[in-house]
Amino acid sequence: MSRTARLLLIIYAIVMLVQAAGSYAASPSGFWDVWTFSGAVSTAYLAIALGCFFSRRTLCEPSVAWLAVAGGFTFSLWVEQVLDHNFPTANGLTDVLQYLGPFVFFVTASASIYFGSRGPNGPPNTLRRRSILLAVWVVGACLVLWSLVLGISGDATGLQVVLRQAPWITQLHNVAGSESGPNVQALQPVYGSAGYFFYLLALLLTVLVALWLVIAVAALKGWQSSRALACSAAAFTFLVFWAYTDTFWGWHSLVHQSLWSAWLGTALWLAAPLFVLLFLAPVALRAGQTARLRSMLILQFPIAAFNFAVLPTYFSRDWYDPHLPGLGVLIIGLQFQSWACFALLLVPASERNSSS
Image 1 (cartoon, helix red, strand yellow):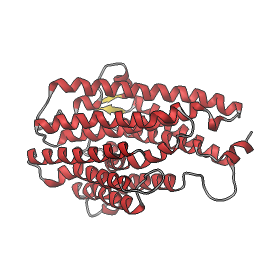
Image 2 (cartoon, rainbow, N blue to C red; image 1 turned 90 degrees about the horizontal axis):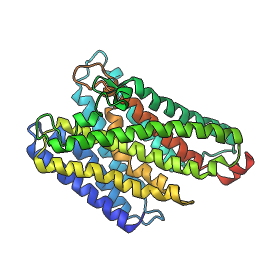
Image 3 (cartoon, rainbow, N blue to C red; image 1 turned 60 degrees about the vertical axis):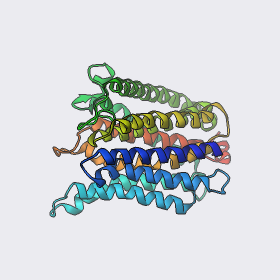
Image 4 (tube, one colour; image 1 turned 90 degrees about the vertical axis):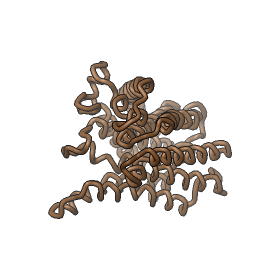
């Protein structure tokens, strides 16, 4: 990661903290709501940014200590979810595990891929690994397509959104459209149009890559090193980061904003995906850039952890929770696709050659 990228990451984290401060100053709901929707993620990003800035490693990745600090801030998101839902005594442990499961799964999977990204220990077994990773990608693709028939925007299904019969969810709920104010009308169509475009792109890319994988697997010729796979890895990593960012700022509609914090939140909503797009472009355009995908596991960690902390609410039937199963399976599916493509790119050359 270049020095410029590290400086931009620090600036991004600081601006997030400023936006959280503006939200806190305008919010009558108190510290914990603002901490859940802004504070924990922004402080986790600041820890990662400082860890990257002072890192002496080749890729300027943060040390385990800095990652532990960021992980502690993100873990507080899950704690707040448990406390906020006031779980009944009779089913307390079951409910806690229900909310803990997705969060722990994401953290564990991300850590496993990050620290063991050069493949598992033990004798090489290309066919087994390929089969597992392909299965993960197929499951992710099925989840993304399943979102078409599930509620993804209020009571509307993904298909209704695609057919323009309903707006994308963040056109209804976003940082500039807080339920308690302000509501910047000029920005609402921006959220809706961007959401529609990227959701459609995720669906189309899933179908196209599925067709390509059928051809590539049938051919059994150097498919792990193809440029198409590198492009797919970059694209799905970008798309899942967009989904995380879009949903994260969508949750801010529950917290009162000042006018300037609403605009600042919108600027951050737009700036982060643009930065990631530029950061991942070399993965698709040039060979030997897969280390950027490894760095993205760290760069997306705070905002992704937030999404997995609130993920169970999308499947909940409680009146105070949003019932958006389509959004939940879309997020999980895109993450599975990103992980699978990344892992396929990192299969050692000796194992790739043995499969020919």
